[in-house]
Image 1 (tube, rainbow, N blue to C red):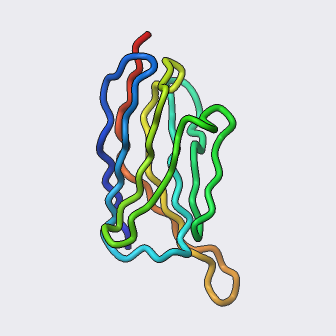
Image 2 (image 1 turned 90 degrees about the horizontal axis):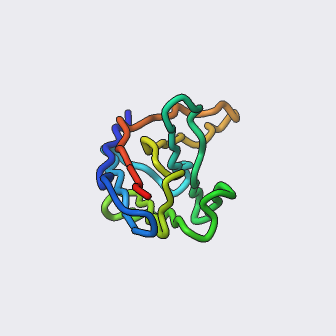
Image 3 (image 1 turned 120 degrees about the vertical axis):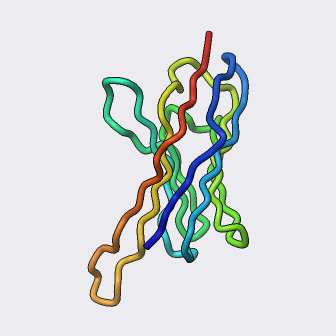
Length: 121
């Protein structure tokens, strides 16, 4: 079982930066898929950034502004967000997915409780 706790959200002006952190309890190997999602009021939860075995990918809307990274020694996943815009306002969630097992069966996934990011214009 993995528990995820996010922190680092807050209120920032347009053009500002924030760094979100997600601390995982329990061991997360390099084979886990680690994501950041966000959900704005009245909208669906969308993937923002993902990292698996060192490879990263981003939603088009944040490409070049956000950076996902991990510190395996600290069991922590980060999301560095630069040049924030009002449309980035949302609750940001950390997400972890276990690798498939020997038989190819998908592993469990885990969610954090979310952290609010608000960007004022």
